[in-house]
Length: 464
Image 1: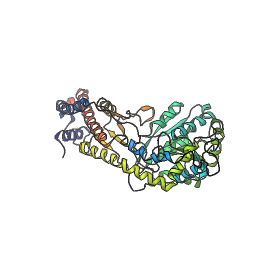
Image 2 (image 1 turned 45 degrees about the vertical axis):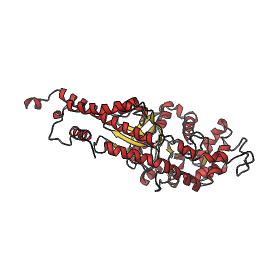
Image 3 (image 1 turned 90 degrees about the horizontal axis):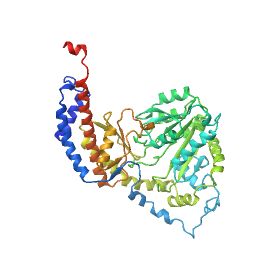
Image 4 (image 1 turned 60 degrees about the vertical axis):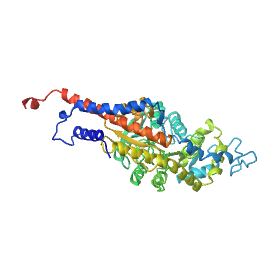
């Protein structure tokens, strides 16, 4: 059942978008919309008075999810056999690229050979940062020269995308180029054109499964086109951040074609860097990060790693392997995660549909996995929505964060992270978000009407 205020917004937005062209926009009453806004502001002030502190800003596992991995802390003891399968004492130095069983486990999860894996510390973001840093200082396998010695280095960035990818590029002075996302992945016509023409384009960021923030998964065709790219730069790399590779929200498994295998068919496996971690499987602060790459890339990376470290935390690697045992153990664990966060996504989607579905003033994704919902407001409203939310006690990811340099050309995209709050907190936060979207939209409509009423008349209008 929709209230009259929501119906009024629906009618108004239809007029402003030209859905009912027989009635000029100028006939809409700014005063009427102001009255409508006042009624919503009354609800808004009531929320503000509650002094709530709610957070939907980052994709963090909730406390109930972290409890799932608590038994991991007990799998090792002073009496345990603390040797890896190759005899390495995990308490001591050694195993630069990870203990064999950890490489095997992470390789199985990614469907990659263990010899093509490096298992590091707890953060795949750290591994991605290090990979860029090495490329800047030394180049990658096949680089004519270090990237820092080039006049310009560019990366393609599918948008909306992951803000931390963009932050790495900005930190190193890498120029970012927006690539629109379609329903099956990045605009590959544009990707193919750009990489084939511009030698300064050295890479592209991708979150191929349950993308951040949209939740979409790249189609087989898109993956095959990535695997068959013919870049002008001999050292172009696909940064394949497979962060949500086993993060389904339902029983249905979503398949992602294996990029490494497809690239190998084309003898282009050197073009691929694949990253993942157990940050949202075991513990974000003490999980396992892994990187998959070709033989040549692995050898090149290990050459630099020998200067950087003698090895990562092998005790943590051993702890993970003994807790999960194998791929089946990890997948069974992920079903427990889905049981906890699936209802949170459903709750947010239900509230969005109930509060905004009829108004037609926003659209959003309904992902079947990952950690985010991507919502688009009317153009020019996202920053105002985030500001209103913050004043009402709801912290969201800053508007613009899903675009390079923090600039969303349409000022419309908002990333929703439902996983951390409790269901009770999430319900309140989602309702406040919807209310703020209504207020911001009405304010935008009032401004549009005022702009049209004060615009200079055309000669045709004067003749009338």
